[in-house]
Length: 307
Image (cartoon, rainbow, N blue to C red; front, top):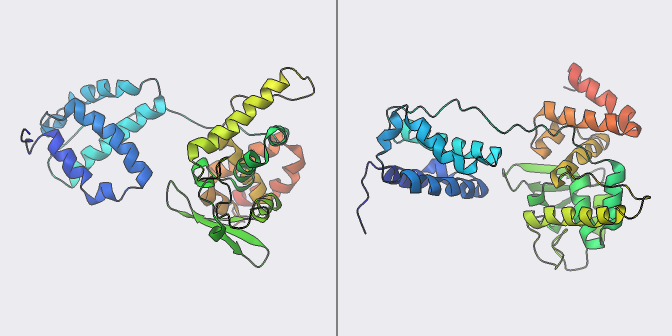
């Protein structure tokens, strides 16, 4: 096996992957980083890391990132990962004296605050779903759980409170703790679990539900419903632009009405306060029957009287 030059990009990358900074990342983030860094090493591994001190290296990195130009989000992520690595090489490893891969313009812009599942669309989804599929939909639309968090729900996460019950768990992506009030629909999920079953929302075959499968179930149910809606004028079509993640806007509104503060909702959803307020405000505008209920709370938040 040829000896790796200690000043090569491969050598410094190896040290980064063995660093406290990299090992401290969440498991999902490490997996994502490794995908980009493996490709980066294949492209630049034999080159001296000092090449990134030259302004022209930004152009070469840009050419490498074009592998993901079909996906603005992945294109941006590749740039972020490289910047993090080069910052570490500069500030911690001291193998670089400078680098110019900073201040990148983001290509991906996403604001889905106004993309809301309407009550009739969720109802159509539930009417089409099997009982097992319904559990996934309810966990997303009532609990606001991201697909990767639905499958981790277990009996041990259910706790009694003075006013009822809550779900206490850690978000898979960030490790941050979240506390959700158990609404009647979520309570039904818990209370109808077969004796001896630990998973609140298992896969359709009874095993652990993965994030991809949780999203896939919702998409599959929509496809089945919309196929019927094409042949039956009495059925509404569920909009194609809606994603499983967008069910969280519905859940955020329900949590606000159930007594959660806007700050609690933002933490639970992993949103900023302003985004949480915008999502709920857009939902209220589209669903008049909840407008009066949430307007007072949003007004209090924006005036500062929520503190």
